Amino acid sequence: MQKIGDIPNTRADNNGEFTDGNVAGGVPPTILPAEWFNTIQRELMSILAAAEIEADSDAFDQVLLSIQKLVSEGIPDLKDASLTQKGIVKLSSATDSTSETLAATPKAVKAAVDASLPIGGTAASATKLATARKIGGVDFDGTKDIDLPFINTTDSNVQLAGVLGVKSLEVYPMTGSAEGGQIDLFDKDGVHVAFFDIDSGGNTRIVSTAAGVAISINKTTGDVTIPKVLNVTGNITSVGSVRAGNGSAQLSTNGNIYGSVWGTDLYTYLTDQLIGIPMPYPLASVPAGFLKCNGAAFSTSTYPRLALKYPSGVLPDMRANAIRGWDDGRGVDAGRALLSQQLDALQNITGNFALGGSKQVAGVTATGAFGPMEVYDALGQQATGAGNIGGITFDASRVARTAAETRMRNIAFNYIVRAL
Image (cartoon, rainbow, N blue to C red):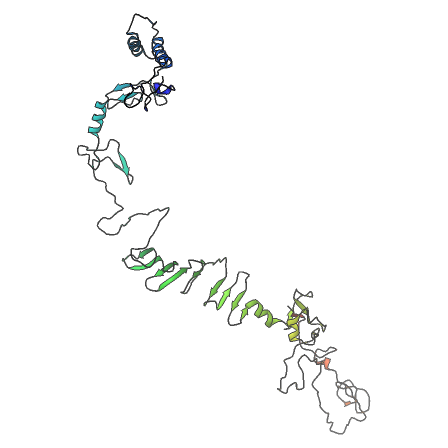
């Protein structure tokens, strides 16, 4: 179908419709071309063809009859409406139907509106819910009150008689507070004893009401500060260093202990103190970082801290030697220098023999520890008992343990010094 204005040069008006024209106004009438009449004829003939009615030049109601037939018998290819396609639908005034192919009449719509709850209104005539639900695990259908025993409505605070499991709890600051959120803790007598909070700097704190801040976690660094005494009965595991006294002491992650008393790591301090001190060692092999005290020279560049104790670059030879305290002006072992060696010696032993009586010892010589050499009787014969002494010998082994040196009782150790 097309309007007369769709055909060029027909002088249709601005709406594409016919006009009789206006001679006075200079508007010509619309021209009626055969093309437009052919369009109308084809449209009318298509209606007759759809209704299967033959055209009759003597009948003037065939279009009407065709339309009536199409309506009464159904238009070909016109389907019933559904949720997936448009089409013909049947009306229904039912208000309890579950059909998805019927269309509601105004009567059905009015009945539904009359039975609905007005906006802002109440269900004045309802006495129970159509389907019961549960509130806090208790059945609720609107016919009775719900008792929630966990909540005590007589107190301004919500109190729970049982355990409350919370997956996520958000605590915000009170209105007008300069600090963050706070969780208060009370004892069995209702006394406020402690609280968790966020201070004005954003740091997380555990605070004792009586003693003040017990633990503080820095907002930026995550450092934990414990300003009070920490008593621990179990183990403490720390990823970072552990500091005390505002850094006066520190247990580092490498195992070192720093202290302001010794001014450095304890390991370094003790090592410096022990370097160069002879130590008795029970094994012949020397552990790493140590040298034998065998009189050998050492490299002062390799062992600079050892060179501070032995500037000569030579260790004392402690093999088969014992350590004696330096006299240092006492006068017992005067004239000794530090690290000087002293050979073995025996304090001098002196004495004499006085022989009295008629029998004298004549021409007798003695060496070493003296003692009786020969004994003679009065006739000059060698005797086995008492008599005159013919000579004297001295031998300490008669009464004491003897050896090629004078020594004390001892146990042999390998003397070593720490060099690094």
